[in-house]
Image 1 (cartoon, one colour):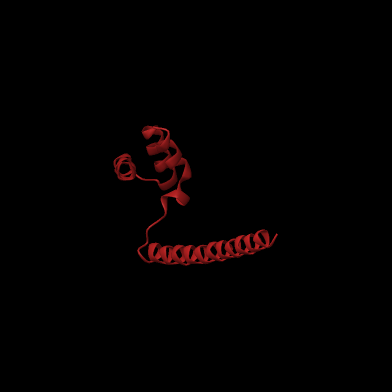
Image 2 (spheres, rainbow, N blue to C red):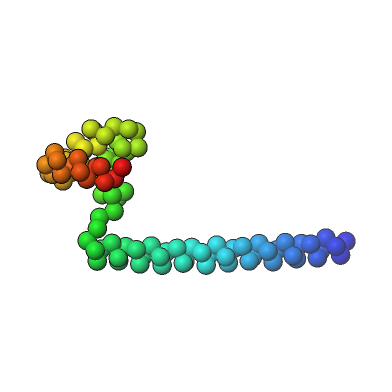
Length: 90
């Protein structure tokens, strides 16, 4: 019976460590994301995933022409500028 008690204590300690590790990793990830957001804002760079999700959806599904059209609708870009922007994303 003492063996199971020792095993129970060791497993419990490992679970506690894993929980603390997840919390620490989560906090570090949040800090990195905040720094990245500040850097993107400072450089005036838009995150394409959040800005035009439908454009990226068209690209993921191989619909490049629809992606160009959607990009033009969002930005008012010329056809040449929209095509260049979509080419940079692919």
